[in-house]
Length: 429
Ligand code: GLU
Image (cartoon, rainbow, N blue to C red):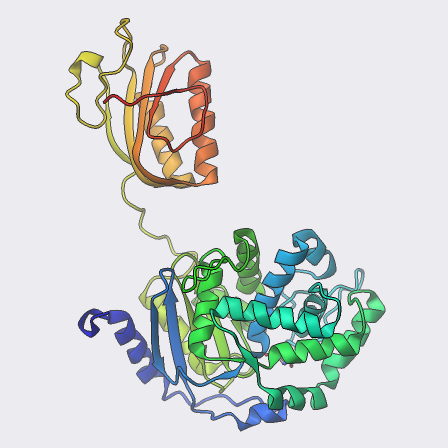
């Protein structure tokens, strides 16, 4: 992109400059190797749904992903086993407790959610494989497909956590006791430690986030990594449970699905817009990176990205409408020369444009409702300029046109965006 018009890189550079001076927070040291991280390392990256990449600061520094791997391994388990099997074994409720809490349901024995350690260990153990070697190979491969390149493991960090991670081991044994964990707890925890030690840059992480925001399709490689319903479920869990016990405050002020990790990584997803990632090892009280949180708050506010933000409506759906007798037609869109010459009175002519989703279909059908007369007559709907129809809009249109046909209206549809139904496919306008 011409540097002169690259305002996204400019915005990231501005964020970097404003946030780099924040020096509150501590580098995690309960895994000794993580304590060696440079506290002032700070990188940001953003990847659009078209695969355009933007970056600022230390975007080439590789760091271990730690808990940021959790949503992506959850995606793998959901894709492999299906939602019912996964949600039978792990809950989806925010725990309100620390990431390493012994948070198991008193009745079911299930961990509260897959974003805390107990839930993540259980989910990792669910990934189908003949043994731990194959299981980790599948996890590493999947993380690489999310990132668009093969990733590797920081062996020193893995060793360091394996030597000190007794609390996670204890959690795994407890879960075997409650029936929440399948297989050998020691193996499950070691696979989880290796997963946490997978290394990537902040730019890799932004591609991973963008893949979730793009319905599971990596916007850089074009590969469908997980099915769209899986990406939706993972984003939902990130939105409610992704930011440790700061998840409520995060949703209030930033309003995007996100996940952070103890090495200072943070991913956030603006669904259908972009993925963003930050790396900064200084962590706040609840374990989120201080600079990352500040940067994302500003991004969300400046660009109006909060999920609950009432975005401006898209382009008009209904582009023309008309009525009157067929003889009035002059060939413009929305005018109908149709009819069979048998004396039909035209009662409704509408043309729509753009992508039709629930809201656009509702707009179109309410305009159609107003233009259709009570007495049966021809109804013409021109969808030639419609670029896409999602499943909800297709069902709504099909149902509405069927109702009109049942009431005796002669429905003529122009543009082949709907399958067959009780309508004629009309061409002449
Ligand atoms: N490997 C770390 C642990 O289990 C990950 C924790 C995190 O990033 O929240 O303690």
